[in-house]
Image 1: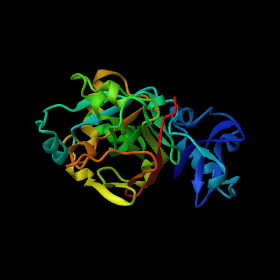
Image 2: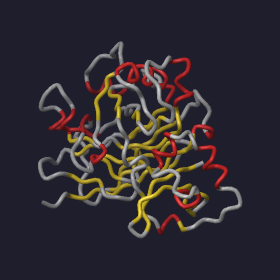
Image 3: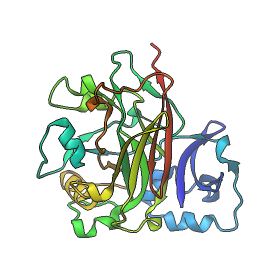
Length: 284
């Protein structure tokens, strides 16, 4: 099942994508759940699946305004340096523990919305990644049971302002400029993708492939990422873990390849879909 958050006629809600249509689950479930995060918190994905039976789409997908898959996550944990090729191109070393930083929700946009190059920098870089959405709360989750806490998967672009990222040893500023990352277009529920499936992630800039890797190449696996983050603080339904980017980022090319006004960037995750965003200059 493909679940989305979206707006229609000014109303924020959530739904399921069926072919090229959208079934309004906020309406179908009689407003029992305020949003997609609320559905996950109530462990009601199976109820949502039941609500689809014999239902025709309420809208065409093109008629709705998509929002980031989870517009209001409590936490966005982003893994860095989690593919060997990317570690090598940065001149760093593989770490025993996951490298993590945090993103803010308003640093993200939805599928189809413009990623903004800020006034302060021209060094806007792409990072295609796989996002894991948590569906079941847990603290100190064991790796062996980590898959039980996964609600689904989405495409993610961890857009980065490289010079601001490298101002200090802390990456936060360069990872949190307003509307520089993207999350979408939908969440594919975990029942569609068995645990330990090998998924391919590909990034394209203006149709040219710039990154490619599979989850078999992750240094720290998805269960390990879940276990580590949940040791720090409880993982809650709607939290997001972004699993790391492959090699090939623009900053490490010669010459560097920065995203600019008019570009189109795509992140494709096997069995999930394609996240596509134009790039625009921010207007003061």
